[in-house]
Image (cartoon, rainbow, N blue to C red; front, side):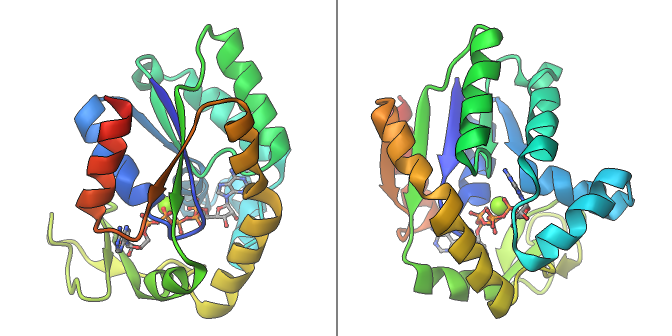
Length: 207
Ligand code: AP5
Ligand code: MG
């Protein structure tokens, strides 16, 4: 099963992806996570990506498409994957379809998680993540509730960059909702319910 998770920054894609990989034993492919790991490791890819990410702009298609093609070949993705934050442009969507087709696979569902932009700004400015296990929490988590690790704030989670990420989303990524609707695989969920309610709605669609 291959699922594309669509939704604005802060819609809860990462939160739902974590629940999905646990329930369905499929790979979590988050281009944002891959890029952040490269920035942290100081690789040439990370050095190239950092300025785009800090400004809330998209990293070039050629870079991101190559990353996902490689990631799809990894063993844990054989049984399927959750694509979180990819595709984000029409070119990425076309590349994903061709790549999966070449592998004899397809996209089963494109799930759009819908949240009002004003809710998003608050969520992202309050988000905190665990340095150790990656748990996605918020400012109320003094330490990670799962492993006790130190929590940190992402460099791009400040009001100015969040606004730009939302603009970039509207311009480049939101049109993919119609693209997948046209392909007959779009489903939409209300992302303003609690994380568990959103997940229950996603599960009822998948099962
Ligand atoms: P990426 O890491 O993908 O960031 P994003 O799309 O901006 O999305 P986020 O990770 O910020 O939000 P999310 O939807 O995962 O929400 P989360 O679950 O964490 O990309 C970062 C950057 O990398 C991009 O700007 C770009 O530069 C680059 N990049 C990445 N992919 C790229 C691509 N394909 N092409 C080009 N460039 C690319 O939740 C957010 C907060 O809300 C948390 O605090 C969480 O606890 C809370 N929350 C979640 N669900 C709920 C709920 N239901 N109710 C209340 N609170 C909730
Ligand atoms: Mg995320």
